[in-house]
Length: 499
Picture 1: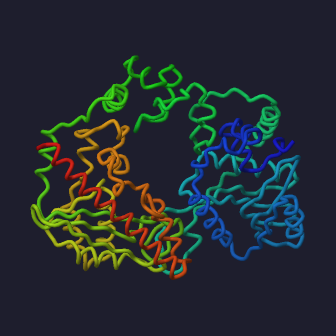
Picture 2: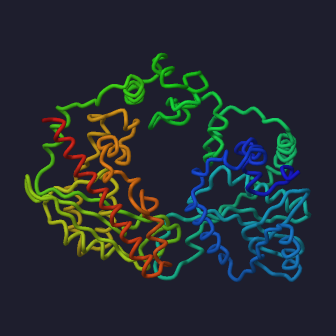
Picture 3: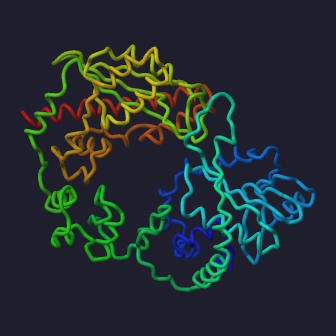
């Protein structure tokens, strides 16, 4: 049976929870929640892996084949020919298959293993990944001189051509892999026995459902959860997963059970109480009035969109640095004045930051009240721009120092409704306050509905034709515009609440 065969990914899935693999083999595909799969992360991993192939100079890549067994003789041929650096080198031992991202062939069956990851640190699951590869090659008679994880160096700053030796950090886990040799063998035997079960194994939900990766079978395994739409402990916003797990194991599962048992306090209790008892909006007028006094005319509403490529594309940028490529700006010049709008969207393919910084200074005067929703984000990006462009520093920092946060009344729960479901994100607050206004619903937008889609779209623009580019630029502009219009409408609602 195929369940008895392993690859790196299948072995690591079993390390997280062997039931993941059992369900993958036995359940229909539609039982799996595909929303847990982040295609952007997968694409990033592929891009980083491709770039890392040149880390040690010239290399030869083993051609991918759907029949993985075809890659094994192709690898052996390259080894026999004395090729020094082989990427996707493939091996199998007793039903255990692995492709090594980078194999350094030292001759006489001596090798070094390098597993490439797009993260900026060594996660615990990576030790199992490299240990599995060490096991397979050792069992095949190879002497593994090094077994290493290669990950992104988050401190690297690009200046000119990419320097792979500085972009990547190599962490030697040879001792770990060697010490895990017997454990890997025991695990494979244990997992094979587990996977041969004809009936579904019992396994209570727990930390393994989300660490290190979210499991698409969570709802299948959460058999104790109510079949109705009744909210449960897993729906409490902001509560740590470990705390949710503890409450779940104690039998405090539904909102009613949580409320009756009096195990929650503060904002967590408020969410449960407001939703369970269907309470009216919770509004603290005194606090909101004090907040509104911090705002003045002219007032500007600012929102940035960013993307964060793992591989730095521009000089003076770091891996995963958030690069501003777009902003929307609504503004009202005086009390009772007309709402106006400005916007800027860079073209993909070149560094957008200078253009963004210059236009921002042109659009926002000094010493005016600017607002953002979750201002820490916008302020951080402005600081980055000010540091990068000294000639614009004073103007940018003046904008920075005069930013106010529209999010505060919702973060502090001075204005709270059951529809917010414990969240103060604008994506929850806006529909909660304007449920009957389709124009304020992100789901009604075309093409781009959230920040991740905006980031993905901007990256994808480099490969679009002229017609596609015009269409998707419009989608980006309308999405970002709604973000600042949302702030305008939310502020109006706050003012209405204290009249």
